[in-house]
Image (cartoon, rainbow, N blue to C red):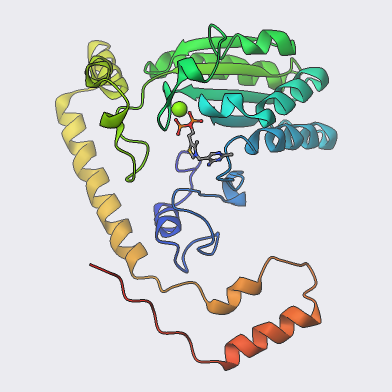
Length: 276
Ligand SMILES: Cc1ncc(C[n+]2csc(CCOP(=O)(O)OP(=O)(O)O)c2C)c(N)n1
Ligand SMILES: [Mg+2]
């Protein structure tokens, strides 16, 4: 979204779930969405986005525009039923969609070996009748090349592609996960040596396109920008209570109008105190 020009402040407001959030504080953090940059709302349920992405790709084709849909998934999502439904339909109807699987070897505590008996995730595409490509997901240039080729093919009527980007989840899945309980720290240490940012940095430096000085300047500039945006986002109030009733029906029924008025007539509930 940021690459496509979405501004940083409303992006951060989504994380705070406040009045500056386009999704009106209704989503989990980091479930951003905005029509302005063609970013469809996330579903937290793993895999549901895949049939939706194929549907959006078919809609684009019916409307006759050049839109190609990028559908992102994890290794864990590849064993959901929705994955099969999406891949099968996309293959049969040559939908303009590119499936981009970030295989980071873990779905919370489940390793890829317990996720599939296939030799890779990319190979699954063969059975659905379209190309599957496996790339080093820590190599930004390789990922760019593979995805661009797939997008160009989809745009020119060549149908879908599944791109598997192999990488590794260095950190925990979430703040409530403790990976030391289920995986070998040595494996983590091995993958740390293949840090994608380090790889890109050394390559750009070798090509004479990047220097330590440029990096220092960029870091300082970005830090200032991000801190400024956080300070601005923090100032926004909570979403208006009555926004609860928005976007449910095109024409609001009398029952909801009545509830909305009742809510507006009642005093706002005291905010729950945060525990320390
Ligand atoms: C249908 C469903 N089942 C279980 C969960 C709980 N859950 C949230 S993230 C996750 C793991 C997803 O793994 P993966 O697809 O590999 O993505 P990653 O988090 O590694 O990027 C699970 C099981 C969920 N959100 N939805
Ligand atoms: Mg994963």
